[in-house]
Every structure is written in structure tokens, then in C-alpha cells.
Image (cartoon, rainbow, N blue to C red):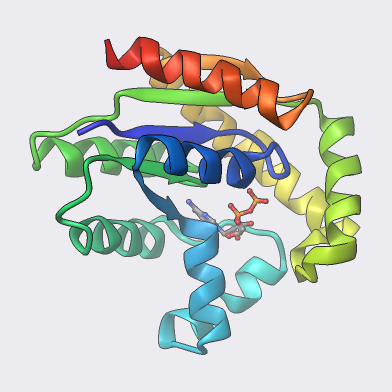
Length: 191
Ligand code: ADP
């Protein structure tokens, strides 16, 4: 198996690049944000529980997120690897993921850090809002999400740096040239 975490602030391009990675490397995509949005649109019990949290731009509690993620991995027994997009977002989630994968004799092989400035993120999300219809793309909610990123999620980086797994990719530029750098990092990690 080859397991990859794609990491970066809201609007860094994780979703865009994930789609291209899946296509080329045939990994199973797990986006916790997409999963939460699906639960909300289907009005499931979980969706009802997290709806307001997402709308406010806050992080869903770890226990809910971790359970949902582990279940999704178990639902994909034939996957040759996973790309985790938007997870882990806290150190507790990263620790839980390591433990969970260890129990399956698996591990995270690579963490791709998409590096984008705060000014660029704000521009991109303002543009995205025009088409996404995402309530959490409103400016005040976006400020919350960025705040969650810089207070909680950023600490996931040193966790994986300590394991020597992080490759930093400049997330500003053409989608294709960013993807080229990502492919080089994946090919190197697969050697
Ligand atoms: P973005 O990367 O643009 O912020 P996502 O689609 O990854 O968007 O996430 C949207 C929202 O879903 C987050 O703001 C948060 O409320 C919730 N969420 C997604 N993943 C997690 C996670 N791993 N832990 C806690 N909350 C999460």
C-alpha cells in the first residue's frame, strides 16, 4: 500500500490536486470535509450533529472525525492505498491514524505540504465562494477556518516532520506545474 496525506490550509488546492493524484496513482480518496458535507446533504444523524460546526468554520470533535474516517478505510478493503485529504487536522487525529494503520500493518508513506500564503488563500476562497455555494466560504467563517488551521492543524506538521515524512510543495503557480512537483515527490517516496 501507499498512503499519502495531503496537507495545507483551506484553499491550498488539496481537493484539486487530490483529484489528479487519484487519477494517476489509483489511490482511494478520503476527504473528511466531503464526507461531512455528504452527511449534511443527506441529513443523516451525523450530518445533523456536525452541520452547525461546519457552518461556523470550526473543527468537528476528534472522536466523531476519527470514527468516521476509520469506518471509511474499513469500507475500502481492496484499496491499494489512500490519499487522506483534510485529515488529520489535529495531533490527536494524526496519532489515532498512526495507531489505526499500525494495527493493519500499514503506515503513512508521505505527507505533501501545500505551501500557500494567507493572502493567496483569502483571494482564492473569495473567488471560490462565487461558485461553491459553501456557507463556510463567507469571509467571517473563513477567518475562523484559517484560525483553526493556525492554532490546531499546523501542529500536525512537526509531528510528521519528526517522522521525516514531509515534503513541502509550493502551492502557488499553475495547477499542472504544482502537480508535476507532487508527482516527483510521490515517485521518489515510492522508490
Ligand atoms: P477546507 O480545506 O477548504 O477548509 P474541507 O472540505 O477540508 O475544507 O473541510 C470543511 C470543514 O469540515 C472544516 O472547516 C471542518 O469543519 C470540517 N472538517 C473536515 N475535516 C475535518 C477534520 N479532520 N477534523 C475536524 N473537522 C474537519
